[in-house]
Amino acid sequence: MPLRNRSARSAAFFDLDKTIIATSSSMAFAGSFVDGGLVTRAHALRTAYAQFLFLVGGADERQTNRLRDSLSDLIKGWEVAKVQQIVQETVHEHIDPVVYDEALDLIRRHQANGRDVVIVSASARDVVEPIAQLLGADAVVASELKVKKGFYTGEITFYAYGEAKADAVRALAEEKGYDLSRSFAYSDSITDTPMLNAVGHGFVINPDRALRAAAAHHGWGALRFKRPVGLHSGPSTRSTLITVVAVAAAVAATVMLVQASRRQDE
Image (cartoon, rainbow, N blue to C red; front, side, top):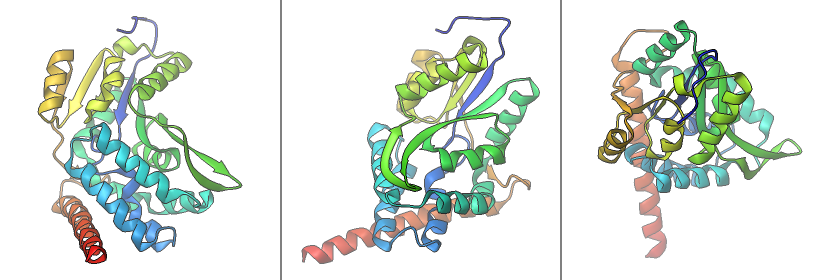
């Protein structure tokens, strides 16, 4: 347990994918990357399959690593400036509709109580930072990608996952003067156990059976986030429809991939 320092500030650490937003932040921009000529059809199919498993699975280590490896292969050779431009230009279009209303309310309440809000995500910093700015977050912990001559090499130099997330949270707390015993953390994934244990107040989001059991064992709270809503509008069916369409597209891409593989085997 972290030591208590009553004179220090506290913070609220939020996982991003399926905690603040109802999808994968990296894959939210897939359509724009296709339009920008960064993604081939074959790559899109493979990555859609990994995204589908992530959406319907429990975000365990195997699923998260599969998504990571798929995305690492996908981005190799991409021009950094072009990726940053696409994300900046389309972040409202892709992220606004899938933000959980409950998460946004929590973020605002923590900030109203004087806490910094930190987004902690395994997605790449070039994707996470514009989303964090959109949400009004105070700091970001994210995966770091190796760049050579302005292009991604495909190598991940820091993967913000598992124990590495907790280490980064502790390092940021040391830098910013956060008292972790008075701080909060939120995540939908069992792989974020180290981060949830690094703070005094851990909460699991939309837990499955395994995550509920872990929460009971560690003494974490449990919350249900149900309403993805537009950041600049009230609850509506539009955001729910967008989420359903995204899942349906991933399912369709997966079916196409399987059918293509079968044809090659015949």
